[in-house]
Length: 574
Image 1: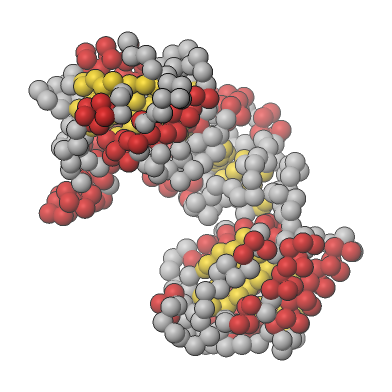
Image 2 (image 1 turned 120 degrees about the vertical axis):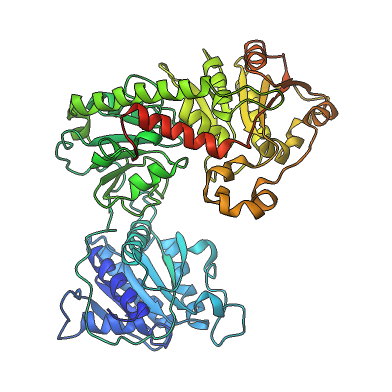
């Protein structure tokens, strides 16, 4: 294989051609050499094997090159062709000289792809020749601007470049927004910049997602018998549940999906995905919403042996962190709605879910309730979700609380669950819950969060005398630190020497005193009975329920729960 930079340039040019690019305008330069060599080969009389056929237009001046590309795009539009035109520059002032043409394309809605070569990241900010901050140079005049790191030849890099090309082309064409315009791919390259062989990669088989515009739906065959699931991430909505029930397939739904209820929802899905007879057999996934909670789901959505259809009705973007989507649509294709899954497949998930739930309950029932902090996070989550009923609203903080609810929640009827999963941070959770309570008068709002999340936004408890009192019960799982890290690789025994200071972050904050300082009533909970009482009889107005939770045992408990589920399914390991 050629050096990383020339190889990556060939992969990108090949992908762009597959996505409809036919014309490329090049202004010569050194840093853009990998792209120039690839284009010369693709436009030459003796194209190498697997090289696409392109038309190359060379101009000395980048300003001129930009307007030539603009003219080509206008010609395509005038003749009814729907395809972007690419323009290639080297780094430095060459990029800035595209700006007049970019502004015209922006206001005219013409699909230009700006392939701006750049120095690698280690040379930026060092005074290196022809190096400046190129990302953002066009500001709001581009629909999308992405800074692409210098290729290294790592595994999966070709697929990721193709995925990048799909996003760039679909955005430039306005496939999901009906708002076409210029897009910048700022492409860093390291030496060597010249190819050392003539070999091109095989035609792309992964990474080229098919993005269907607007309300246009692709022709779909019947869903494969058996190995399909519906995955519902944050904000998925009722369509995810409707499809799962109509098609007769398992529903793997996060708590804040708006879809987690009914007979097809599998509550212990994240533990069952590791089972080769369940998760291992999945070959088709329909994804709604943004899944952000579990690594098993992320691994499923990144598998190259799974056909992934993303249903994303809103926005220019779509969720595909694994860069593995085969198709992106804005609504459920009717063929999927009319298809029927294999009842034995659904039954297998249901039976496993019942066994796994019983195993979790048994393991948690025998967990010792020590004096002082003795409750486990999953126990608190189970108690809170069991207390939610009727018009109650549950607001979930990030880190362990939402994951514990994901594991323990079992709802037969829809429950209103809200969470800040856009970036999944712990910022502003109390304030968000306050706004929800004010915006939903007459409904009881409970917010479940960890102690660090509470401390991060404790100022959200402040209420001015002139403002109404929100009906909000804040339930704080206080394990005096960041216990989620104990369940990750950072909590491994070999890292114990540094874990507590840089991840565990133990503290002695007095939550009762903080609450009192803001004029908010506080209740301390140490036992299951006390927790049940606090949930059954919430105080009026805004109140804080502090639940002392043991995090010393958190990593071991996670292991015991997984082992209990494996044993219930008759597995020594997954």
